[in-house]
Image 1 (tube, one colour):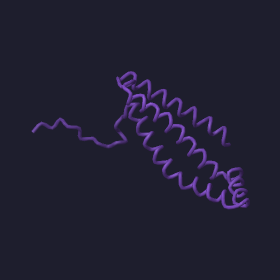
Image 2 (cartoon, rainbow, N blue to C red):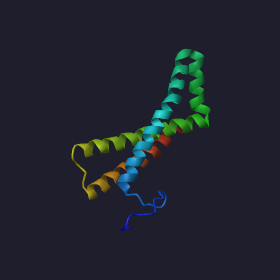
Image 3 (cartoon, helix red, strand yellow):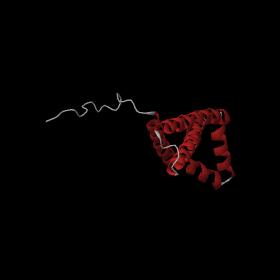
Image 4 (cartoon, rainbow, N blue to C red):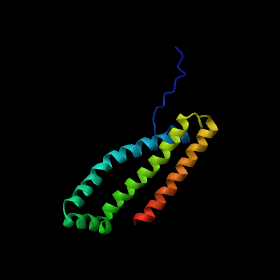
Length: 125
C-alpha cells in the first residue's frame, strides 16, 4: 500500500492561498450579516414604535460603545461581502479565473475590504 497521502490535516498549519482566504472571508461575512440582521431588526422595530423608541435607538447609537461596535462590524462585513461578491460575479463571467489574475483579484478585494473597514470605522466613530 502506497502511503503518500498527507497525514497532517491540522488546518492551523496548512498555508491557504490568498484566493482561498478571500473566499473564506466572504462566507464568514455572510454569516455575520445573517446573525447581525437580528440586531438591526430590533433597533428598526424599536425606532418605529414611538418617538421615545426612536430617541432611545438614536441615543444608543450615539453613546453606546457596544452598539457602535456592532454597527461598525455589520457595515464592515457588508462592504467586504459586497466587494467579494463582485469578485465572484466577475469570476462567474469567466474573468480572473487563472492563477495570477485570481491572486490579483483576491489582493484587490482584500485591499478594498481593509480600506472600507477603516473608512467605515472613521464614519461610525
